[in-house]
Length: 243
Image 1 (cartoon, rainbow, N blue to C red):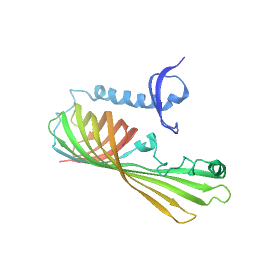
Image 2 (tube, one colour; image 1 turned 180 degrees about the horizontal axis):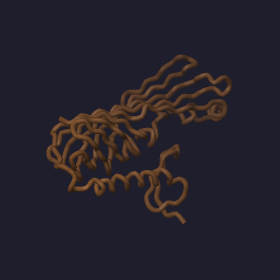
Image 3 (tube, helix red, strand yellow; image 1 turned 45 degrees about the vertical axis):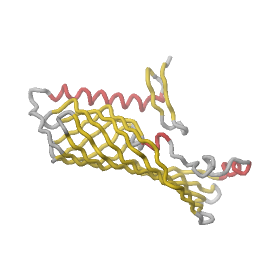
Image 4 (cartoon, rainbow, N blue to C red; image 1 turned 60 degrees about the vertical axis):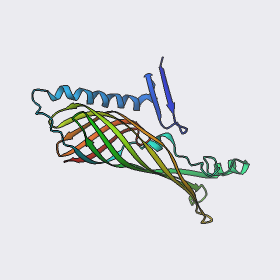
């Protein structure tokens, strides 16, 4: 018997689980737990006696990409123009079109640039700018011609507080929490008529929580993070430089 709580987005292609879950839907949840366990076991294997003291450098610049972009996990707002998810108005004709069309979704993933200032060995503040885009394209089943395209683009400036709880010569492990504003730009293009509609930019709160992150290197370093939020869900990889 499984005992668990879960939140799923409207497409039900992503869920967050909590508790004990034994069914196949928890494969992603188990994988995250395995990676988290490996990260937490790394400090013990590193060995305090063999590690030189950590040399704090005040400045960091970094570039990263998400494994699973946050807006795609929680759902793009493709109904910005008063239409249902099939791309047609709610009506009998809309139901008919639902049977003669099919759709494809594309995403850019999430890409971020960041600057970090290390106040101490433990505490740091970061300022970042992230981009993520998604498109929902509709095609005719009769001839595979494209009918319409709904698009959303997000630019997200964010400030993040980071707390490092392990510092070694080459390895740093940390947790962080960030908040910012996601500015979205949406458009709809009708390939049949050639018309295009743009919506005014919209702003919403953006949050990102990273329970565990690990960086390896001194001046040039690579890092991996596990987190959940509007920037990414699951994990992200990146590379950075300290000076």
